[in-house]
Image (cartoon, rainbow, N blue to C red; front, top):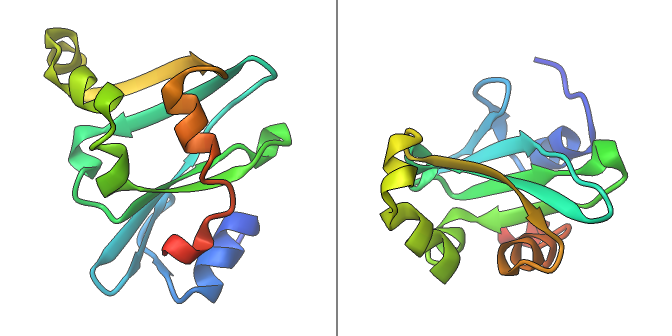
Length: 122
């Protein structure tokens, strides 16, 4: 498959091989790339329970002139907000995933955005 953007170019340069449209692998490390949306007040953050054993999730806001954020899954899933969300009945009823627009001042938004261009984590 062709390389088609800054995220794909960077993953290729780091030695990752594309497994599918959004999945990349290098050895035992699997990375998921999400094309997410943002505006001046909100950021959409998505995760799925099935991704908990991946190495990282890349939140790509570049189509909206935003950052590209590389977040280790192990760290994301240990955040107090995410831990509490995963315990809720509504989380289970939603198919064990979360896709939500968070205000910029929310702890989860601040965490994700603090990982801008953190390619060294991969």
